[in-house]
Image (cartoon, rainbow, N blue to C red; front, top):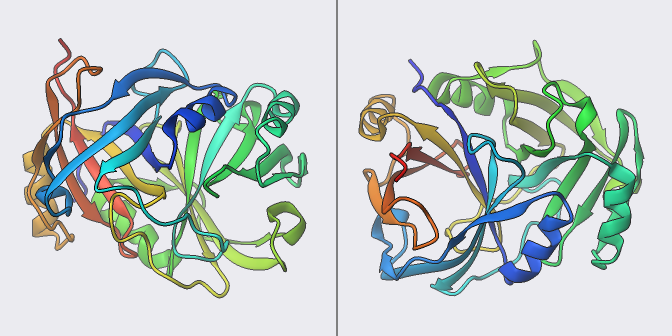
Length: 302
């Protein structure tokens, strides 16, 4: 039986310059709700040797704290490393899906950021575009009106997987996600739309929580899938996705019983002075391709 997830908390975006990225995300309709700057703390239960410390912002797109946020971080200890995935058929968290009120105005605003790629505005399913930020992290920008709940903000995450059926079953059986279609559909990542050398055929499937449709996980299995997901939490890119639960220790026990890879038990983490709680209980584990999943026990707000 799957654990009960209340809602999506955030997708973690590790970057080299969180101030630069804050400016970019502001143009996408986000604002900094809290500064994330805790003191150095033991990183063992996060899979990091020695002390760990980060600096960044909780970037929100509305007043509802149950809407998915972007956890924007620059690691200080250990120093951030690496670069984001360049290839569209690399295993891992591939792109943020962001819904905006005005696609054309957003496209115009991002041109001033001198991003590596913007376009096109017209897609088979309406107006939208793809771009990469200064660290090469990809964004799929869509019109909020094509969403089922019509809200702007963080609409979902694109996850490239080695076997779409295995990954679909894992998210359904362990996390309680449901499929929005009967079976994966055949799609194409067009070279002209994604700034790549040739078209890439892939299987695609959308998942959401049964009780909420405001955050979609779009699973993709592109042809020529290769590589491995980021192996350390302080790597540039989209490292983990966090979900809220009521009782994290109970979830940990159930996931262990189901054979889910949970390297460490839940850990209590200091979140820094910008958060209205002393800290949160967090649990880190991995999907079949090694993408990091985080559970956060819903705290009592002060």
